Length: 139
Image (cartoon, rainbow, N blue to C red):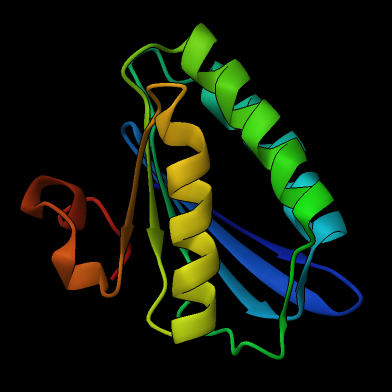
């Protein structure tokens, strides 16, 4: 398992990779800049995964006050995710969001990409993930 921590001025992200499961957990503020910088780091990781990657974005440590993604930031993330879908068919993304506002925004993202036939699923708890994915998450 590969693990790496990214420290930003206003937040932090932890990245773990186990086979084709990529787990991203965010702390502090979560802004467009942090999200887009993380997608750049993920590009390198995804390029090295031969099969369809499964991305698990865990926002359980964030409050609604710390979740600062804008509509423009979300649109850029959608475009990035479309590129992943085209390059790695069968890839999936799970968003774990138990805080109501973050859950709602994540569901809006899920609905936006549903027209693109992208496999995006929003859940409230890590324990709601399929067991085979849970087994590959860091402990």
